[in-house]
Image (cartoon, rainbow over all chains, first blue to last red; front, side, top):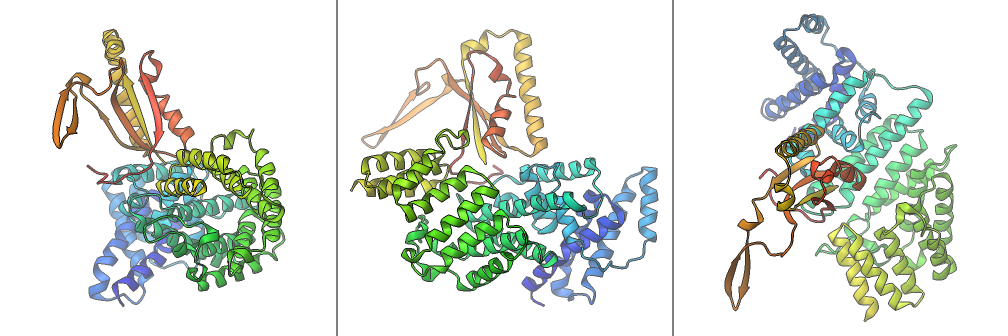
Length: 403
Length: 123
């Protein structure tokens, strides 16, 4: 087996081993450390010595031994008893896949989103703390503190290692999906520095979403999120020029879109639209699929895009959704209709001075022939954004409208 | 999201503090740093020497010209900063409000989001 195949195998086994350990012994923090050590040992030994016949059992045995060592090094009486219990437990490997339970635990509601994403990448994704730190452009010590605090919080919350039931399960699943969405976006909006590392985050989010989808194939929103990621990722190559400049959707070279990802994403969207209740991810995926369906920007089915945004606005009201609907409305009913819809957002505190509101207004003013207004709003939007690539793009649009 | 929280100090205001107030100010920063480290939100923090020790460098006709003293003629100077990584601007503002300088008249605490970063983070 090649080194990269071993790496893939380890990443797949990691959450299963950790899940099984936590299920048996509790103490998430200790099990997480022990699993990490077992994975490192395997990564060092397997390429030369070969992969054992039962790789999962091997990892379980090594991780359990590490856990015993950890507990033994502590002199508390209660923990010595735990050590005996661990020692006596048979080295069998449970058949159930605990990956999903583990994901629910990492996305525990008592954690901040930043901690949820970090812990998910480490415990389920199998990234090292250094890799996560690099991807989020923070020092390793900062990330290590964040992860360690997250583990302590989970311990303090006293969460049991099982899938929540009923409404709570639904609610917790939404958090899991949101965390995967955040990880994906972090990779997609490569704003600075090590863009390659961040692209990996998008792939990792897709891998995790596939894992959840394999466990819950009937859930419409899980399917919708996976589809949304695939359809967005399909445009990745066309989204920037070689120099790193942004290319807007209507100017992208659509032959550079990844057909395989689009086909898979579109198929998933179609499958998910049959589910009883439509959710925001399904609708956003349906919108992305509508764009993907047009061979050229002029062929976009804007009435359908607008209708989908309208439903999205009803089920998940949010000023950014209204903003996007204004763009679609401008295509179906003209720029003045779009501008009228935008003006309904003027009193919204969440959007005050937001660069997206300014840039969309600039775009619609340009379409309406108000070049002075468009110029002013592109300039203001350029000042308001926190992304250098976006600022460059908006400044370019400002100079283009003036020329 | 990364933010720079810069602390604009006024040497005259600092000099006028009582010894107890100075100790409380230093202790407040210590507590703040410990909490930021624990929450995993601190990237780095640095304090700068007195503005009288600054040098302004310009190049004219290809020749560097060095002038001792700060660039701005002002009562307030950049005294130091916290570089943090946190959830949102709201959180950054919440953290900035915990900096003891924010409670002292004449000292300024400013929050700005980072737009571009490069270089070894562990330096």
